[in-house]
Length: 284
Image (cartoon, rainbow, N blue to C red; front, side, top):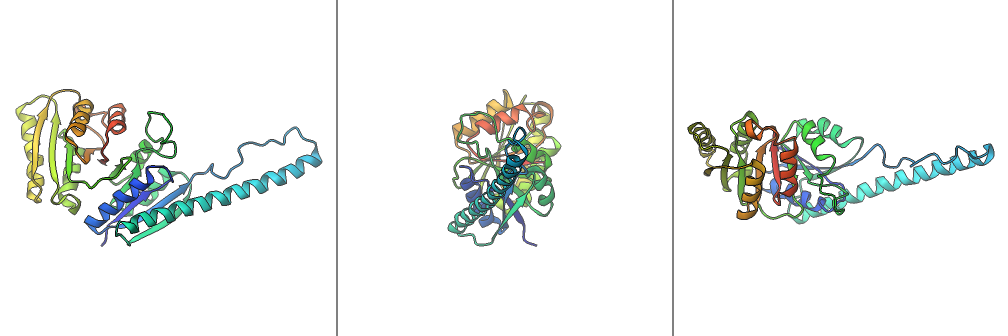
C-alpha cells in the first residue's frame, strides 16, 4: 500500500516550501501527496450586523444586500482556495512529482487534521501561516493545535526549501524520542542521509548507553549515525548546533522526557522551532 502525505497550503509565503518539501519526500518514498486547503468557519461570514438601528423598510433592503455580499465573499474565498491548490499542484509537478491530489475543505484546520491523518504517513504544514510576513515573533497559531491533534508525524516546513542531506536528531531517551528513531529506521526517507544523534545533559554512563542504543537501531536499518552528549540548555544547544553546522532537518519527539519534557508542546520547543532555520519533524 502506497503511503500518503497530507500537505496543508494556505497561500502564505510558506506554502511554496511546503509543496517543495512534500515533493522531496514523495520523490524519496513514493508517497502520494494529498494537498488540502481549509476554509475556516469564519471565512466568508459577515463581519458584523450593521442594520440594527435602521428602520424596517431600509433594514430589510440592507439585510438582503448584506446577504448578497456574504454570498459573494464566500464564492471569492472558494475561488481563492482553488487557485491556491492549483498553484500548489503546479509547484509539485514542476519538481517531477505527478502523483498528487488536491482538496478544498470547510471547517477547523486542527479538526481536519484529526479526521484526515489516520490514513496518512505524515502531515506537512508551514511554520507560520498567512501572517508570516508580519513582524510577530510567534509561531503560526494553528501549529500547536495541529501537533496536538495529529496522530502522525508532523513535518514543519521552513521558509525556504533546500535538499535535505544532514539530519540532527534530538535524543532524550524518552518514549517519543524512541518512536522518532524507530520511525527513521523504518522509513526510506532517511536512507543515505548523514545523521547525528545528540543528547543535551550530563555525560553519564546511562546517557551514553541510551544514545548508543539509538545509534544501533539506526545502524541495523543501514543508517550510520554519529553521537554526541553536550551540556547546556536543550533549545539553545540544539539551535546553535543546527545553525553553526548547517543541518537540513531537525528530528525530535513531540513530547519530551526529563530536561526535554517541555520540548513540545511547550515554550522550549516553540522557541526552538521559531528560531530554527531548518524544517522540523515532530514524532509523537
